[in-house]
Image (cartoon, rainbow, N blue to C red; front, top):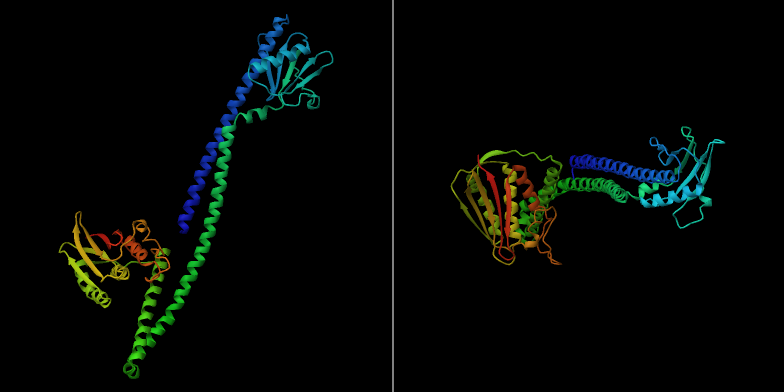
Length: 424
């Protein structure tokens, strides 16, 4: 994965996650406000009914400024006379339960004679009924009323949180997602570093191979020119083998280096305008020799039509040689029969197809044959040599040129590869 791609993933991923966190935080806050308002309304209704009960008992209750909330969890109720603590506890329990609030609360009554709050009791709805140890500090004094009682809900925050289960759960899932994203980035960056080290090692190694391979090829040519070697069939055969294998090894090394340049974006094409039919007529004789040396037949059908295209002839030649080489390697036990067809398509396009009568490709592998290093599994039999780079190279060169490449194959029925190019 390239640096630019990783940077885009990090930037867009971070923006997306920050947006989700912002939206989720907003909804959590809104949910908190709604639940807090709901709690406040329930308490207000219950305390108003408690005040009404005292009014029915003959105590004068003001019509305005009846209930005040000095703090978020503390309420005071204005009354114009002294009240009984037992009655207050009874009414508070009944009315709070009637509105669906079964939360712990504590209450107290203001004694104006000594300007202090007389603590009533701590009412607990938990499993522990003895609430003596749960008593808190004295309730605060509210100096604007003469007669009043106060009610405090010490667990108000926990009550609201307990009613926000879905929102909190969604936030927890989102935080887990963020943690997974951060971990994934860490893994990606680590794998990228290892991949770069591996690529650098392979590139350096292949570069180091170039010199000894060239030396072997030169030495083989020197041997082949020597009269003693020419007269000795065995030495002559071995010299030819060394030369051919050095050429083959050089081709593989060069292919690795070209792919490295493609992946780094350093491959510079040198496109030129060529008539595809004329170019093929010049290249095909050399291809035919290679095919016939391996006991095959190369057939050509080149249609006359507007075939002027822009292409890097060096890489186009490599593409054609790679496709022909694949057809020869996967011919199996049949005599290789390879067809090269050139025909024109609508909308000013030209198509070059290479087909063969080889083994074909199983349908489950068709989408993978252009992947780097992919080779069709053959079990413990390795009768076809290669690194799985040929079609990967072909695909990348076509992509660089802006050409379309398609593969059609059936197992046992051969393979057909078509490249569609835009004609000038």
